[in-house]
Length: 212
Image 1 (cartoon, one colour):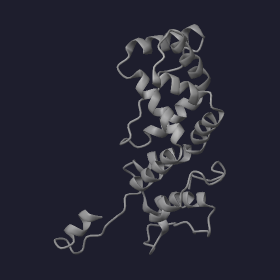
Image 2 (cartoon, one colour):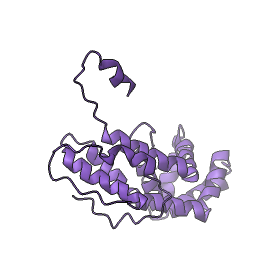
Image 3 (cartoon, rainbow, N blue to C red):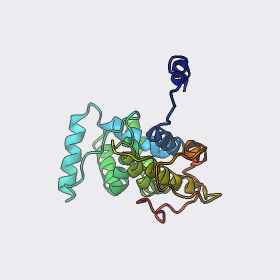
Protein backbone atom coordinates (compact mmCIF):
# COMPACT_ATOMS: atom_id res chain seq x y z
CA UNK A 1 0.00 0.00 0.00
CA UNK A 2 1.02 3.64 -0.38
CA UNK A 3 1.18 4.13 3.38
CA UNK A 4 3.61 1.21 3.71
CA UNK A 5 5.82 2.61 0.95
CA UNK A 6 6.10 5.90 2.84
CA UNK A 7 7.25 4.36 6.13
CA UNK A 8 9.81 1.89 4.72
CA UNK A 9 12.46 4.62 4.85
CA UNK A 10 11.85 5.10 8.55
CA UNK A 11 11.21 1.42 9.36
CA UNK A 12 13.32 -0.58 6.89
CA UNK A 13 12.57 -3.89 8.60
CA UNK A 14 8.79 -3.41 8.53
CA UNK A 15 6.72 -6.14 6.91
CA UNK A 16 3.43 -5.42 5.19
CA UNK A 17 0.70 -7.87 6.24
CA UNK A 18 -2.38 -7.94 4.05
CA UNK A 19 -5.66 -7.75 5.96
CA UNK A 20 -7.69 -10.83 5.06
CA UNK A 21 -10.90 -9.22 6.30
CA UNK A 22 -10.46 -6.33 3.87
CA UNK A 23 -9.80 -8.77 1.03
CA UNK A 24 -13.03 -10.62 1.77
CA UNK A 25 -14.87 -7.32 1.98
CA UNK A 26 -13.66 -6.55 -1.55
CA UNK A 27 -14.86 -9.98 -2.63
CA UNK A 28 -18.27 -9.10 -1.23
CA UNK A 29 -18.29 -5.91 -3.28
CA UNK A 30 -18.06 -7.98 -6.48
CA UNK A 31 -21.35 -9.61 -5.52
CA UNK A 32 -23.06 -6.28 -4.99
CA UNK A 33 -21.78 -4.95 -8.31
CA UNK A 34 -22.88 -8.03 -10.27
CA UNK A 35 -26.37 -8.31 -8.78
CA UNK A 36 -27.55 -4.83 -9.68
CA UNK A 37 -31.27 -5.58 -9.36
CA UNK A 38 -30.78 -7.09 -5.92
CA UNK A 39 -28.75 -4.06 -4.89
CA UNK A 40 -31.50 -1.81 -6.22
CA UNK A 41 -34.14 -3.73 -4.25
CA UNK A 42 -32.10 -3.31 -1.08
CA UNK A 43 -31.72 0.42 -1.71
CA UNK A 44 -35.43 0.89 -2.38
CA UNK A 45 -36.44 -0.88 0.82
CA UNK A 46 -34.09 1.37 2.73
CA UNK A 47 -35.54 4.48 1.10
CA UNK A 48 -39.24 3.75 1.62
CA UNK A 49 -38.83 3.51 5.38
CA UNK A 50 -36.44 6.42 5.83
CA UNK A 51 -38.15 9.32 7.65
CA UNK A 52 -41.54 7.58 7.34
CA UNK A 53 -42.73 6.40 10.73
CA UNK A 54 -46.33 6.07 9.47
CA UNK A 55 -45.26 3.46 6.93
CA UNK A 56 -43.41 1.56 9.62
CA UNK A 57 -46.59 1.46 11.68
CA UNK A 58 -48.60 0.21 8.68
CA UNK A 59 -45.94 -2.44 8.10
CA UNK A 60 -46.28 -3.74 11.67
CA UNK A 61 -50.08 -3.51 11.50
CA UNK A 62 -50.21 -5.60 8.30
CA UNK A 63 -47.91 -8.17 9.87
CA UNK A 64 -50.25 -8.53 12.83
CA UNK A 65 -53.34 -8.53 10.60
CA UNK A 66 -52.03 -11.36 8.41
CA UNK A 67 -50.78 -13.41 11.34
CA UNK A 68 -47.13 -12.85 10.46
CA UNK A 69 -46.34 -10.50 13.33
CA UNK A 70 -42.92 -12.12 13.68
CA UNK A 71 -41.79 -10.25 10.53
CA UNK A 72 -39.35 -7.57 11.70
CA UNK A 73 -38.70 -4.33 9.91
CA UNK A 74 -36.05 -4.68 7.20
CA UNK A 75 -32.51 -3.94 8.38
CA UNK A 76 -30.79 -0.77 7.22
CA UNK A 77 -27.60 -1.67 5.32
CA UNK A 78 -24.52 0.53 5.47
CA UNK A 79 -22.08 0.11 2.59
CA UNK A 80 -19.03 0.75 4.76
CA UNK A 81 -20.11 -1.82 7.35
CA UNK A 82 -18.93 -5.34 6.49
CA UNK A 83 -21.61 -7.94 5.90
CA UNK A 84 -24.51 -5.50 6.29
CA UNK A 85 -25.53 -5.78 2.62
CA UNK A 86 -25.44 -9.59 2.68
CA UNK A 87 -27.35 -9.76 5.95
CA UNK A 88 -30.01 -7.47 4.49
CA UNK A 89 -30.39 -9.66 1.38
CA UNK A 90 -30.64 -12.77 3.58
CA UNK A 91 -33.38 -11.03 5.56
CA UNK A 92 -35.27 -10.00 2.41
CA UNK A 93 -35.14 -13.54 1.03
CA UNK A 94 -37.14 -14.78 4.04
CA UNK A 95 -40.02 -12.34 3.61
CA UNK A 96 -40.45 -11.78 -0.13
CA UNK A 97 -44.07 -13.02 -0.07
CA UNK A 98 -44.97 -10.62 2.75
CA UNK A 99 -43.19 -7.75 1.01
CA UNK A 100 -45.38 -8.19 -2.06
CA UNK A 101 -48.54 -7.87 0.04
CA UNK A 102 -47.18 -4.86 1.89
CA UNK A 103 -46.16 -2.96 -1.24
CA UNK A 104 -49.54 -3.71 -2.85
CA UNK A 105 -51.29 -2.36 0.26
CA UNK A 106 -49.20 0.81 0.18
CA UNK A 107 -50.06 1.36 -3.48
CA UNK A 108 -53.75 0.71 -2.83
CA UNK A 109 -53.99 3.50 -0.25
CA UNK A 110 -52.79 5.94 -2.88
CA UNK A 111 -49.16 6.20 -1.83
CA UNK A 112 -47.87 5.46 -5.33
CA UNK A 113 -44.36 6.83 -5.05
CA UNK A 114 -41.74 6.04 -7.67
CA UNK A 115 -39.86 3.90 -5.15
CA UNK A 116 -42.92 1.76 -4.35
CA UNK A 117 -43.82 1.36 -8.02
CA UNK A 118 -40.31 0.23 -8.90
CA UNK A 119 -40.18 -2.00 -5.85
CA UNK A 120 -43.38 -3.75 -6.92
CA UNK A 121 -41.89 -4.45 -10.34
CA UNK A 122 -38.77 -5.95 -8.80
CA UNK A 123 -40.70 -8.11 -6.32
CA UNK A 124 -42.90 -9.52 -9.08
CA UNK A 125 -39.91 -10.24 -11.32
CA UNK A 126 -39.14 -13.94 -10.87
CA UNK A 127 -35.56 -13.45 -12.03
CA UNK A 128 -34.92 -10.83 -9.34
CA UNK A 129 -36.48 -13.00 -6.63
CA UNK A 130 -34.33 -15.90 -7.82
CA UNK A 131 -31.23 -13.71 -7.56
CA UNK A 132 -32.19 -12.67 -4.03
CA UNK A 133 -32.57 -16.30 -3.00
CA UNK A 134 -29.31 -17.22 -4.72
CA UNK A 135 -27.31 -14.54 -2.92
CA UNK A 136 -28.94 -15.39 0.42
CA UNK A 137 -28.16 -19.10 0.05
CA UNK A 138 -24.70 -18.80 -1.49
CA UNK A 139 -23.20 -15.97 0.55
CA UNK A 140 -23.71 -17.49 3.99
CA UNK A 141 -20.24 -18.99 4.11
CA UNK A 142 -18.66 -15.73 2.99
CA UNK A 143 -20.54 -13.86 5.71
CA UNK A 144 -19.50 -16.40 8.33
CA UNK A 145 -15.88 -16.27 7.23
CA UNK A 146 -15.74 -12.48 7.26
CA UNK A 147 -17.25 -12.48 10.74
CA UNK A 148 -14.61 -15.00 11.80
CA UNK A 149 -11.83 -12.76 10.45
CA UNK A 150 -13.11 -9.91 12.61
CA UNK A 151 -12.25 -11.94 15.69
CA UNK A 152 -9.22 -11.01 17.79
CA UNK A 153 -8.06 -14.64 17.97
CA UNK A 154 -6.91 -15.51 14.44
CA UNK A 155 -4.16 -17.99 13.61
CA UNK A 156 -2.38 -17.58 10.29
CA UNK A 157 -2.57 -21.27 9.37
CA UNK A 158 -6.32 -21.27 10.08
CA UNK A 159 -6.75 -18.16 7.95
CA UNK A 160 -4.81 -19.79 5.13
CA UNK A 161 -6.91 -22.95 5.28
CA UNK A 162 -10.19 -21.03 5.21
CA UNK A 163 -9.21 -18.70 2.39
CA UNK A 164 -8.18 -21.65 0.22
CA UNK A 165 -11.87 -22.60 0.23
CA UNK A 166 -12.58 -19.31 -1.49
CA UNK A 167 -10.18 -20.32 -4.22
CA UNK A 168 -12.39 -23.35 -4.80
CA UNK A 169 -15.14 -20.99 -6.01
CA UNK A 170 -13.22 -20.64 -9.24
CA UNK A 171 -13.30 -24.36 -9.82
CA UNK A 172 -9.90 -24.90 -8.21
CA UNK A 173 -7.24 -25.27 -10.85
CA UNK A 174 -4.99 -26.95 -8.32
CA UNK A 175 -5.28 -28.39 -4.85
CA UNK A 176 -3.44 -26.29 -2.27
CA UNK A 177 -2.37 -28.34 0.78
CA UNK A 178 -3.57 -26.91 4.10
CA UNK A 179 -1.11 -25.45 6.57
CA UNK A 180 -0.78 -27.30 9.86
CA UNK A 181 1.35 -24.69 11.60
CA UNK A 182 2.28 -21.03 11.43
CA UNK A 183 5.39 -21.78 9.37
CA UNK A 184 5.80 -19.17 6.64
CA UNK A 185 4.97 -20.24 3.09
CA UNK A 186 6.17 -18.11 0.19
CA UNK A 187 3.80 -16.66 -2.41
CA UNK A 188 0.54 -17.99 -1.02
CA UNK A 189 -2.49 -17.22 -3.19
CA UNK A 190 -4.33 -15.25 -0.50
CA UNK A 191 -4.15 -11.97 -2.41
CA UNK A 192 -5.55 -13.55 -5.56
CA UNK A 193 -8.98 -14.34 -4.14
CA UNK A 194 -10.52 -11.03 -5.20
CA UNK A 195 -9.58 -11.35 -8.84
CA UNK A 196 -10.71 -14.95 -9.28
CA UNK A 197 -13.80 -15.00 -7.07
CA UNK A 198 -16.81 -14.40 -9.30
CA UNK A 199 -20.30 -14.91 -7.82
CA UNK A 200 -21.71 -15.68 -11.25
CA UNK A 201 -19.54 -18.78 -11.64
CA UNK A 202 -21.62 -21.92 -11.08
CA UNK A 203 -20.27 -23.50 -7.91
CA UNK A 204 -21.50 -25.75 -5.15
CA UNK A 205 -20.79 -23.83 -1.96
CA UNK A 206 -22.60 -26.03 0.53
CA UNK A 207 -20.34 -28.98 -0.21
CA UNK A 208 -17.27 -27.16 1.10
CA UNK A 209 -15.85 -27.90 4.54
CA UNK A 210 -15.41 -24.52 6.26
CA UNK A 211 -14.58 -25.87 9.72
CA UNK A 212 -10.90 -26.64 9.24
